[in-house]
Image: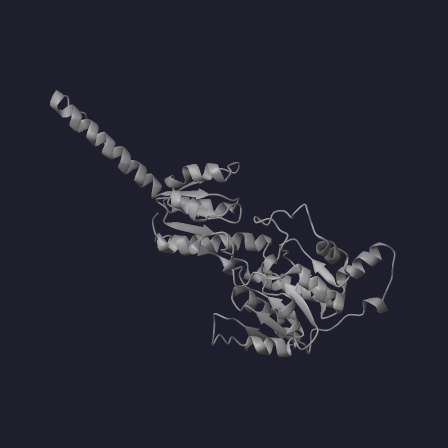
Length: 345
């Protein structure tokens, strides 16, 4: 807005008022077109949003308090898992119109409060489902065929064949709990193994896709040889897999977790690994991870050390969805969702 001063004395007050109004409107207009990028993300996000009319700001050294101090300047926030966008934070973001989560999990965002204020919450699980599907299959193959254990032995000059006899996937029943993007991607990858894939999802029905048979949780307990977890972390799923849950399986099982660490109660998993109820476990996630997923606790309990020393356990550092391709696809999916919701900033 361009203002020309009124030279007459009686116009000075009017001019000052107009300047104040202009400043307020200008600040609000900026807020409506600014996006705060909190975590490191693929350059595509900034490029695409800038082309769509947004100003994108990224302050890699800022901490939570510093982000809170500027939150009122932005209409959009892009996040992975560096900080939590809880209610106290969101209350400071008075002009916020959307939150974009680069990835699948939304547990670090108070979605209920955000949506009550009309803030659109977007994520991009479609971008990492291929990576997770492939990694989960890789974990299963490594676990059943003792690939990691045999590799370590050979590197140490040990040539053990009989002790590393594998187990085939063919003919087994794989039970998938959670049949969203990740669960369905894993099921698709199992299709060529001539295995029986069954799945249970509390919040979905009639989702037959040719890759799985929809069942009840009771049937998962009854039929599964292998259990693969693909659920979000919520109050309901926190420690969902505990001693009682595991005891309900008719067979001794192999367990895979590529969802979130706290879905499995580690102390109970270790107990069942020791008894043989759980024949082996492949874990991409652990409950001992920092909330950012970038590091693990310094004070690790006995159960963690048991897992790291067990030959029937395969561990990876939360990288199931972490590929060169998914880095781009996560960004692309999220950007397209933002552009669809806000065609021009």
